[in-house]
Length: 100
Length: 166
Image (cartoon, rainbow over all chains, first blue to last red; front, side, top):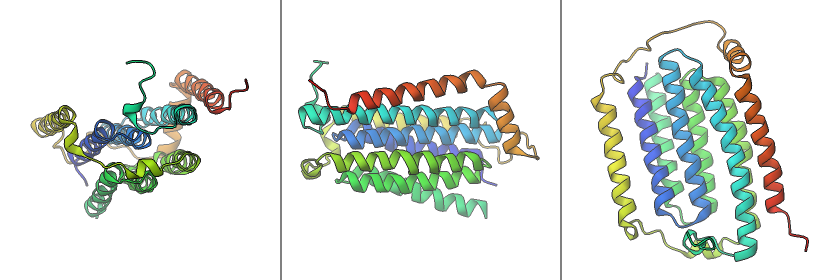
């Protein structure tokens, strides 16, 4: 039997790697992929805790996270295609149209 | 047995996740992310969640990663391939990451709640039937809201990616 902390530890490691991708990479595509990695590491935590406490809510929330992720990726890639068509750049630093 | 499989899947998933972040070519990142998702779905099987494992493969590997690969094919990534990955270039983000990682490690190992080897409660029986009953009885409204969100995202993605007509 694998103890709970090893699953939590795997989630932590994957979360830190994904956060590194979001914060350090400048390529929009890789930033989006790292975002997927972040959401997946959270899913591992949800399901591990759900199994540990014998509660289905962990799995149900993971299902909702996956559904929302699919919606998010569709919209994000639509925005990316529109951005590349208008501005022809893939770097996060070059996208300053909104002066943020 | 379980422990060996967990170690194998966890190691491969961490290695592929690092590859996602450090790979210079976005296509390599996408393929490494696909491998990582497969490992994570295997971990879901170890966690007694076979339905989630199948959903993970269908949605992530089957839909999301194919979407990524199509977008990579649509746009020209050759300019992005040339740019270097310099982790030292962004010091505040690096410090933030180290603090975040250390904090989470300390919290996991400090708490005695995570050290229990056996689950608090174990139930047998038909897991998927009970899961679907819970999903469609107690969580029907969030389920419907999720479907409306998916529809809105579908329409939004089509509108965003369409060529502007005048």
